[in-house]
Length: 275
Image (cartoon, rainbow, N blue to C red):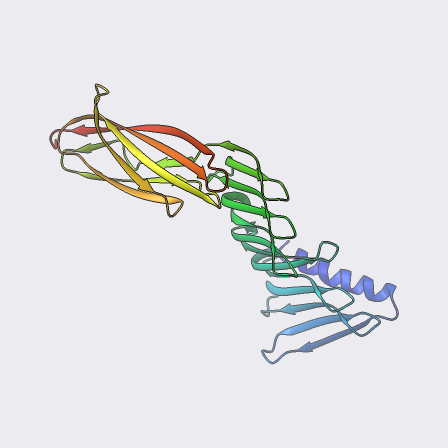
């Protein structure tokens, strides 16, 4: 099974050659002493190229072309598993896709761009799942949707626009997740907390933290302007007890002035003495 995909590619090339007497094949070693197998269209343009990277034939680069010379698909394989950068072109949509793979799974930037340079979409993948911020665009560059996914591929927030850039709807929560490494600390300790928020284009995003004790008595309030999607907060506790942190998010659309808001809470238990 190790070289199964490579065998399929080689057989496909052989079948195509046998079915088309006008096609031409070449086989040679490049300047790096790597075996290269090429097939050409009847017009002389390159149809496909297979470069075998190592002598064991476990690593190879396969590139497929349209008859006008444009690259249709290109990918690198290790042990018949796609790895690293893949680029492919959708001719009917005039879109060039760029993807990154690790162990055969999509990981990293996933984007598609028109020949004009305008994005069709752009986002991040983690083991094939959409994560973080995703943006989809009309061909003129106006935003269709702004989407935000958590680390498990679940969509947490969505904004949808019409072709004129007007907001049609927005649903979801402004806080994607609150990461607290531990829910209990000793007096005098500092705990680092990461709050991940959405940050839609042309919007002002703010975060405020209300602090309460275990009797729900208000202690203090602090506000933060959100410049990045992830905010690192440090909390130090000088007295024992149960502390409630209320995180309030607010999104203001700078074009319409419309405000969305909501809140999430978490608890920290502070222990008086070390055992």
